[in-house]
Amino acid sequence: MNQGMNILKKGDIFLVIIVIAAALTALAFYNWSRDKHKEGSSAIVKQGDVIVHRINLNEIKEPYTFEIEGDYRLVVEVSNGSIRVLEADCPDRLCVKSGWLRYKGDIAVCLPNKTMIKLEGVNDSVDGISY
Image (tube, rainbow, N blue to C red; front, side):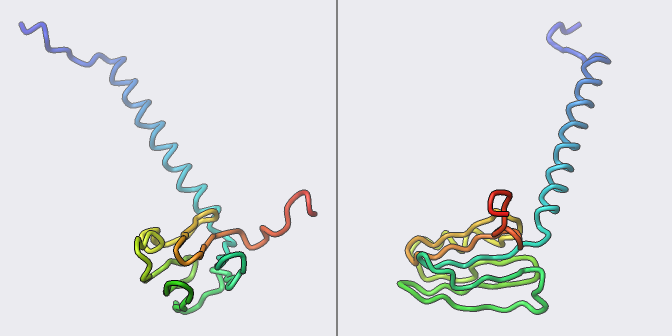
């Protein structure tokens, strides 16, 4: 017989099943917690230090786009529950590569145009300290 071949024992199979179950449970919890953060999201669009748009993404009935002018031109697309930079004529286009922002804390930044889009909860302006 070939001594180099190891066969899994019952304990090894049990361990593999436990690891797979734990990984699937962690993935399910991660997806569930991301969906919980989605509720009540609003987008803050800033250029420099000025808020140019504040959008409650849950109230969007029809998708639309708008432009942000500056050193470069950005086209922002807004849909129910999400927002993205659709087009940009800045050099690196990292803001476009950020894709759809859907969850609280998601962010897209265009440094050359000094523009930032950040998702927050609808009531993030009130916290435990200011209340």
